[in-house]
Image 1 (cartoon, rainbow, N blue to C red):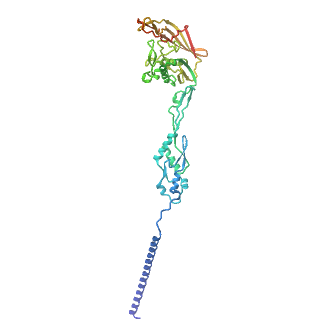
Image 2: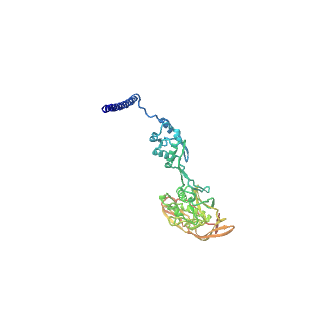
Amino acid sequence: MSRAEAGGTRAKQRGAIWLGVAGGMVVVAAGFIAAYFAVGSRSVASAATTTPTQPEPVRGLAPQNMSAWLSRDVEVKTANGTTKLTWAELGIEVDADEAGRLSGGADLASLAAKGSLPVRIDRDKAIKVLNELKAKTDKAPINAYLDLEARKISDDQSGLGLDAWGSLPRLAIAARTGAGSVELATVAVPAEITKTGLGIDDISHVMGHYSTRFPVTDRDRNFNLKLAASKLDGVVLKPNEEWSFNGTVGERAEKEGYKIAHVITAGEMVDGLAGGTCQISTTLFGAAFFAGISIVDTTNHSRPSAYTPLGFDATVVWPNTDLKLKNPYEFPIVIHYVVANGEAKVEILGKERPYDKIIFERKVLEESPFTTEERLDDEIAQDETSIDQEGFPGYKLERLRKFIKNGKTVKTNKWTVLYKPVTEYIRRGTNPAPDAKKAEQKEIHSLKPPTGEEFKMAQ
């Protein structure tokens, strides 16, 4: 074969090869195109035959299930017992965001077991309900107090108050775990008056007592007696404490409620504001005397009193004439004062008195006669008379207080007491007219002069 023929043969072979390659590529391309249209056809067909659907609802969180759960009764424990409310009433509601993130198949039981129930607290609603519960269930504290009639001290007791804000975390935990009960947070509420604050720990003994009588018909005077005594009942005197009647009772003024009644002024019985207060101070003086309380300052009346023995009284006048006492014992004492049924009665309570007996002795040192004065009245028939005030002698007395222990006098207090003579006032008529009025005979409460030179009382 010539070189020319050989070259032509190789050229034909190369052309056949390129033609085969080109044909293969065409076949492959045709396959890709066929595959593309086949897939596209299936997608179109699928889109044509399938309708869109909502996600399948979570079985345990179906709206009706959550509504039923929020309506369940919950036992709510407070300081004053238990009550039943629903979770919804307690301000618990579904947390929509958290519920939406849960996968299908979750249910309430499994969520509750993990403490993951999708709920939240409406704080405003919860606080409102908790405050309503607080108003109904709080236990108020009980103050310590002196039971003076029973002569014992009642101890204080703390109260319990619902802590509304502190209860919110407990509600949240209980709600997320689906608990059947929840114990709300409480705080102790201390009493305002404690046993320590009373300043006394023993009132079981009557250390001294005294009583005076008064007519129940004089209502205004009786009112004054009760008003003044009410300010003294329960007063505690600490060891070595000095105490003032005026400082405790205060001003006896109309603005304080006192009324007009009989008082002694300049030796004469007249009507005056707060009449009767001196009977309150005198009765207290008597109880303090027999209790062995120190008498720091006392003034007797300008004339004797009908309700107490001569030499055993203590007048008070606001603000300067006072009755002052001092507790000489190493333990506190308390005044117990009762005014009722025509009797004013005082007890000094505390620990047992360290003396077997305390004696009041009175000795008359001097007696002075009284004078008589006439008061002329031109409205009363001539020579008609009546007694405006009965006279009474004056006295100088020695008052003794003796402290007896094991049959012996271990201490004696001594005072000199003076009573000026009480002038007798006689009203005499000067009207000569035949129709002039007669003299009015007033009721006279005669004071009895002391019999003998000595007088004793003891407790």
